[in-house]
Image (cartoon, rainbow, N blue to C red; front, side):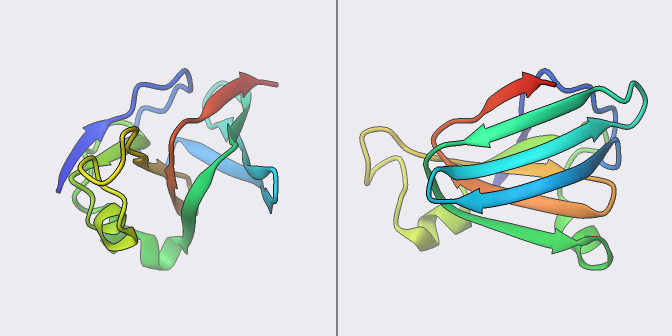
Length: 121
């Protein structure tokens, strides 16, 4: 498993830089509202097609975040064991999904998806 910083427009200097405001899952997809800790800029993250997601609360997210770089709060897991367990790897699909990690002040969110859009609100 390799961890890379996910290049996103949200300013997040470290893993606790963003605060989760809202989280909504429906048949249209997944929406996550975040606020940047320093600037208070709000963001809407939209995932239209998802394979799965996990939300881990703060007291348990610390062990999950250990392999991530100290700088940043948005990561992509390459060679993801989770995607492999779901049966969707680069070799099984023409357009392989991504395993994204979003670190918030009190939560760690994992999303298996093909793409995400970021909108400043």
